[in-house]
Image 1: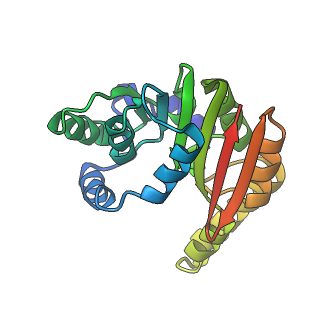
Image 2: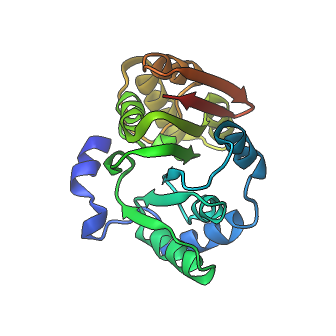
Image 3: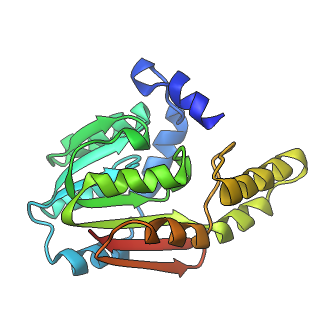
Length: 221
């Protein structure tokens, strides 16, 4: 189902999974609560953002894109939503900050970067293994990746809010994705699955840390 949507619903043809009203409300909230702790974690690895090429993959309204650019990085914003693109461009213009913009599915990002940043949108990918390999290819040799992923604990919290057929459908989709790597819905991979996926790639340094309902993945290629 997800693969079919990938071919039929193209952002360049007007497809946008994020309604304008939701995008504006979400952006207003997200710009108020940028996580400075994750920015400091990234800085501790890089030393400095100055002139580092950075891909904000699944950048949403662009709050982190603008923050990284403000600190001197050469940032590329990439997301599927044209509504988020409009918001991010307006914010960058208002603050006189230079950001490059790229519209498309997560897997359609291209180029080579010193840093990849991907926050709380992993579950929108078409295939967990292919997406991890896509990220690997986007990183320059000696480059870094910083990924924040909702894991199965977050999924369980969300399931408590559901009932009936939808709850059963989410559980089934999660089971299929974990055991057979088949995605029928946008579901969050487990910490165990993410550990297995990234361990199969050739990183000089790899660290996965489960922080409550999130998994923080940091690596150096």
